[in-house]
Length: 116
Length: 119
Image (cartoon, rainbow over all chains, first blue to last red; front, side):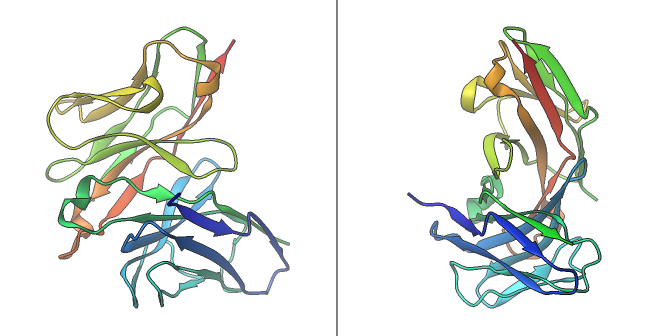
């Protein structure tokens, strides 16, 4: 079955350490997204990528970095510069065909990161 | 800037009663609107979308949504609630202003409404 896989499901790190969250999709989608979810704040966009080797900052990119070396993969690194990294992180994808304006996002099941 | 608002943090409904989860939006141009559902510790699942055409949109699990252009609303509805409908619901709008020549535009989410159905 096609879908998006995020790993690990739970991640624990000490403050000051960088950590990388994995996101892989086999939907053949060009666009991929990273969202952060905090209680009562909905989803906020961190980074998105329209095509391999290209990505753009979202609304809360500070303290995060991404790469898009392969179409299937869009890993997110939470750096030590991110002041409040504890959150639920969601990866999503969508096609970028001309009719894609009406295409919903497909989401992975998230990674819950706890930093102490 | 395009935005979406969900005015209720929580909605409580008795099983078998109709339910409504409210959403209002602000866009320039034609709206592309979506509803998603999230169960605990899971990703979001697509329920339905409005692009153009009929104001009443039917989606998954018996849900529907009513688009009202004059009130800039896109409320989610279900005629008879089930306990299994209890979850977090998000309204979203596609930000067409972020296109910049590409169709990979951003989707902006509301803050979410927690729906609780009591037996």
